[in-house]
Image 1 (cartoon, rainbow, N blue to C red):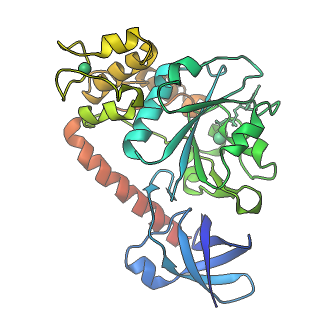
Image 2 (image 1 turned 90 degrees about the vertical axis):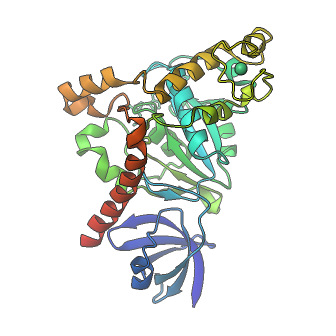
Length: 339
Ligand SMILES: Nc1nc2c(ncn2[C@@H]2O[C@H](COP(=O)(O)OP(=O)(O)O)[C@@H](O)[C@H]2O)c(=O)[nH]1
Ligand SMILES: [Mg+2]
Ligand SMILES: [Zn+2]
């Protein structure tokens, strides 16, 4: 008998597939699939041939609409970018970096901004984002304030959670799905993120109404070498600019309408500042987070997962690093084969 389902978890050679009736099947992958180089990801929609009451073999993978490699997840509908209002302090520029980078890499998928820990302190970003097409939700994983509306935004989608360490991504997932097996708190005591990244799993909202993937953050990302003219398209509120040149980067060029747009409130000044900094990052002029990185490194242990480490990748190295990312993935798969 053949059944269709979705891979929610991969452990060693085992693939856990949930079917339409919410039943979990423990599966192997047919050797032929792996030989063809078809690596399987959590989120993949597959066809299984059943071999027992809850066992099967994956015989086919459906075409994916997208995938990310770190952590490995396929068929993402939405990226939930979690920041906290406080502890760690809200960082406007860093949030805009996440939004821009993810929109650049996945232009068709929705990004949802979620500000957590409003029980400790409140911030209001409505004005900053009102022209951007990004929705902002305010929640507390602790008191559950704002959670109902948040859950509404998670239904019938596969959502990947990302954001800096310590903002409460895992806590939010736990608040939404109380029996989710997620790790909360300082993860550095659990021997590095590698292991955790590898075992990414999709956690089902009740009655297959959507899936959530906790991640330790997209560990590292860099704007180095990205196409400058495409970065603009990740700032949706810029779409009504009427500059004299079609290739205007809006950095004070003659005939640029950015100043006017800011004046009339079509573009928030904070967003424009972030845009300018991101362009500089793409040109390799500034490197975000290096201070935190070196601090974390010298302290080691406890601090090593705090802050975000964004190493500079030079333009010409970028293509190589993309290739390396793929190799890393293959390595991960190889290691898992050895278990
Ligand atoms: N006060 C408060 N603390 C929270 C909230 N959400 C998470 N925390 C705490 O913040 C810390 C980091 O949470 P965690 O979920 O591990 O963050 P992650 O690294 O983003 O997954 C933990 O000590 C949580 O108990 C919240 O809404 N309010
Ligand atoms: Mg976490
Ligand atoms: Zn312009």
